[in-house]
Amino acid sequence: MSSAELQIDPYGPVFISYRHSDGKSIADRVSTLLKSVGVPVWIDSEAMQVGHIEKRVNRAIEQTISGAVVISTEDTARSDVISKNEVPGLLRLLDNDPTFPICIINVNDKDAVREGLDYSAPDRRMRTVTVESDLRGPLSSIKQFGVEEEDLIALVGAMATERVKRIHQACQEKDDRIVRLGLYSWEESVDHASSGNHLDLRLAAPKSGDRFNREALKTFKDTLKETRKAVESVSPSVLQVEGRAHLFLAFVLGAQFPETFVKRAIVRQSGENWGRENNGDQNESFLHLTDQRVCNESSAGRARVAVYLDLVAGRLDSAFTSFVEANKEKISYSARIGMREPGQIDPNDGARIAREASNLIRDLSSPHGSSSHGAAHIDLMMRCPLPLAFLIGRNVNTLSFTVYEYERDKDRYVPMLDVDTFNNRSNVITKVLV
Image 1: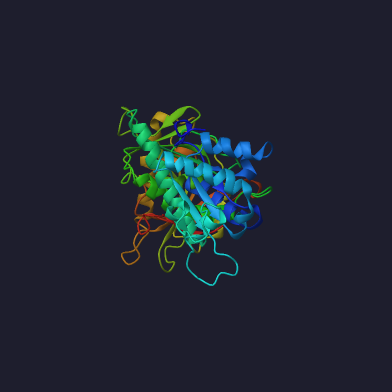
Image 2: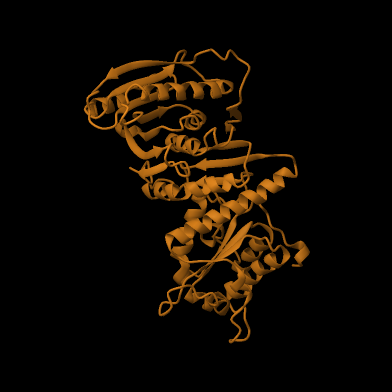
């Protein structure tokens, strides 16, 4: 294929090149981190179950990818597919477009004496130098990373930022300045197909029989700050979000991108847009407080307030009531926030409902804190449409939370994450609890 025919798709996946024998565990970890930060992945274990290996690899490199991660391990020297197909194809893309996002994970040989990276190793292993004494092959000038977790997180952050910038540039050419995010935590998916979003944050789905995936949440905590950096790199005026995720994750994503960071946000669900401001009565109240209960106002330290955000028709209070009863010595106060007129919520009212809910939560935190400990910590349980969870999260900056998720078969709320929107603005998640 000629250089003129080579295609780099800014919406495409990142190609991961690796040797199975000693690179698979690294490739799997990089794939998980990339998905969590929002970057789709082309990796043979998912994208190529059957078919001609070399032809499928060549086609992916020539027509569908947006970037590449090459994992250089000792055994890559034994791979003809890597040295004759993958690396030459990626170098052609780089020659055709010097801004093509590509990086190398460089793993030292098992018996290596040196502690730092051997920057000449990838060229030797992948046969891109013909003279043994020539240590400056084409791979030595490509950004190289180590294999430690902090190195891999830096790598996926850089790839996410490059992806957002390239897509944003393509959108600006069409006078489109919206940054689009997807959030998915319910189902596994082979995500190398383009969704049209700048980033699609995909957490590994819970294992069979489980409702939550602790390792996926830990990875999400580690990568969320990189997602924010990537979005921040283009200073968007509008954020558009879609997806299918747990409510507490939608809330956390909203807290990570508050109104002070991106002024406008729209959540798309089932063909409807939530978050647009409408021209209705701005003084109209949609919500009210019920089931307010004083528990233990004399508890030592920072006060805690349990809040049940219940915005779905048909009350389901038993899990929250059980939580309050079990924790009445630890919490100072509890309350339910409900709709004045339960029923189907009009998405056009979403922005005002979210703002009113956020104000009520802020009011509940204020009277129960002392001058020495500040506003109360909020134990937040939610039963509402996903768009509202995200929009409410955008309006609660300066407060701290423990967010919960409902476990249906046990009728209880499980603590998932600690969230601090005041002291940890680059990454609002402070602890994984589940």
